[in-house]
Image (cartoon, rainbow, N blue to C red; front, side):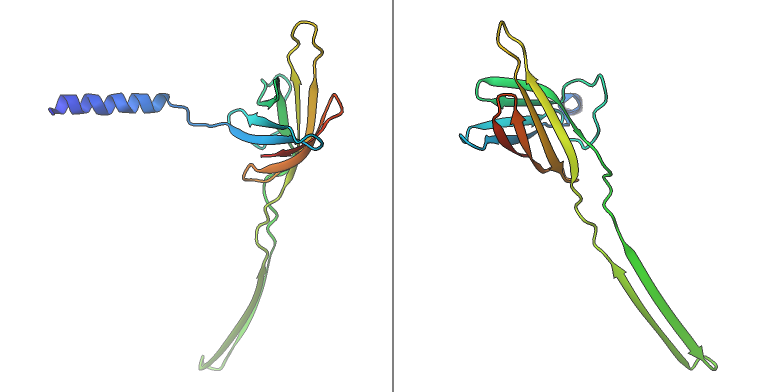
Length: 163
């Protein structure tokens, strides 16, 4: 293979790689607490711990049976875990430096994986005369994007949420 063909192959591969999506969606599931019916929740563009702002496009979809819901989720609170540190030290020296003594003590609490509250509000599209259905969820999410919560449908159905 000559140099120009190899160079063309490398450049072509680089251009194709640049076009590939770099963010993947985060998926989870919903389970009806009475019937056991399972659904799928997808956080579009991956789960991101941030508050929703007015005018944002929908960032989550839910497939529940034949129904497709679309809407937004929001996470509030501080993302930084509390990190507590304490230290104490002391020392003394005697004479011309022949005798030295020192001591120390310390405490450091490990960083906690802090869960933050969030909510998810989705609705079905209005098709023909069918009534719009809503699903409202509250959840706790950790810094790694995993969470659990509870959902309530406009029809009164209750769901458990995991992602």
